[in-house]
Length: 68
Image (cartoon, rainbow, N blue to C red):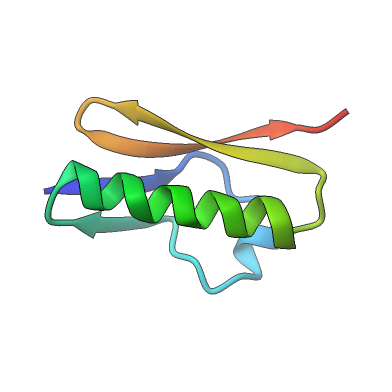
């Protein structure tokens, strides 16, 4: 089992339908879902942050960085 964990929840994230931690059967599935989440968040959120995935200790973290 692998988790997708959002490291920091910005206001846009808190107002979305995404969960801060979700679990999947394997790392491949978790990575696929995390990448899909990042695409949506980078395209649809307010653009103050950039989101990217990182594999950490058997889980997939979604990291947030400030733009500008």
